[in-house]
Amino acid sequence: MSNILPIVVGYLLGSIPSAFIVAKTKGIDLRDKTKDGRFGAAVVKRECGFFSGILVGIIDFFKGGSSIIIAEKLSHQEWVIVLSGLAAIIGHNWSIYLKFLGGKGAAISFGNLFFLLTQSFLLACLFTAIPAFLLRKRKTTLGMRTSSFLTIILFLSTLFWGLISNVSLTLSFSPIIFSLPMIIKKN
Image 1 (cartoon, rainbow, N blue to C red):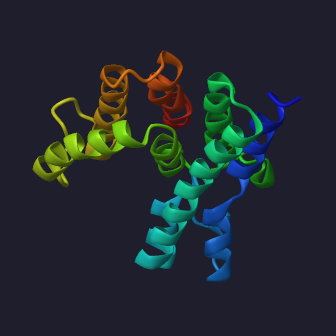
Image 2: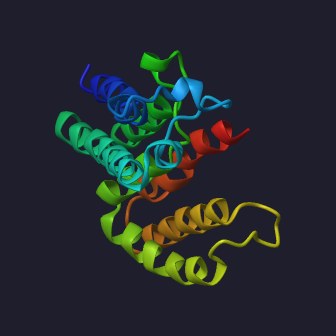
């Protein structure tokens, strides 16, 4: 039970529809505003304003971090902690409270990585800052959005820094595991 409970808690915590709730406080029903059923910080920023979008991003970041912290308290097994973070992303992307609609999972994934691999994630953020500055508002040569390209760089950099920092393989490969729901949601 101590291995299943953190995963269930991660999913339920991730499922809390922060974008939907923040938009509702502004009198906006996001179900009427999005055709693709994606509720995240970017949609809230577009529909409710910059500060509301930032608030949703911060809440989602800490939902991810909270899923990691709770899993660490309930289970000391690394695989359970990683699966709890993954469950939070899945809950965010396919919320039980919104008929399995939700966001794309970026902010919650970043929260997971920050609380799980703090040093590796911060080093990856520094490494990603240079291409972010150079590529701002441009499409990459691969034809993908710059934000998607930079997210790939961030996740791979976090993996790299985790591996060379002697972090366990389970934790080091968590960025790849956390990217899976984001890839699935994109299609």
